Each structure stands twice: as structure tokens, then as C-alpha cells.
Image (cartoon, rainbow, N blue to C red; front, side, top):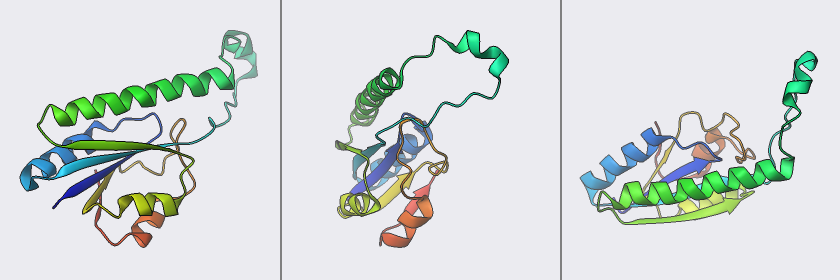
Length: 147
């Protein structure tokens, strides 16, 4: 096995996905390629308790929220890089914004295994939601393992 692709969607960082990929990479002398997906917008806030609105007036603007989430994703990229390289495993990564299923499939063509979070379809903050895990599994010819 040459390359293990991990797909991380939005600001969430599923450590179990990274841990699984590290174990597999060590077993098979593989590299880890991390694909970070980022949507363009935050989901709408919505708030179901109007009587509490005065306490929520300190919310940041949508632009600030996206900027803060982008910083979290940048930090996640650096953290995953450190976690993988500390294990003496070759690492590379790419961040794609508003990626289509086709782009993800093209990115996965160099991989031998894809590892994703079992909660991939749960809409994360600043995540990509154009396609589902089921869609991905249908279109790729390599194994997709959920952790």
C-alpha cells in the first residue's frame, strides 16, 4: 500500500481517523495524504429561543466566523502534519474550498485507501456538503474505510 488518503471535512478533527491512518501507514510503509475540505460559507445560525436574544448579541459577523474557522482549519493542517511526521511517516496535504465530488475523486486517484470519519455526512462548521460518503463510495475504485 503506497498512499493512504484521509479526508477531513470542515473544522472538525477526528483524531481516530488520523490514528487509524498512522497505524495502517506504519504496517504498510505508506505515506499519508490529507485532503482538507472547506465550504465557502457557514450554515445559518438560527436561534430557537427569542427570549434569549439579548445574550446572543455578542455573536460575531459571518465574515469573522468564517475567518476564525479558516484559522482553525489551518491549525488542523499543521497539527495533523506534526502528528504524522512525528511517527516518521511521509506526509502531504491539500486544502480544497468548495470541492466537487469529481475533484475529490481526482485527488484520490493516487491513493490505495481512503479513511474518513464515520460522521462525514453530518454537516460540520465550514465543511463541504455537496456530496455524501455514499456518493464517494459509489464513484471511487479503492476501499473507503470509515472510523
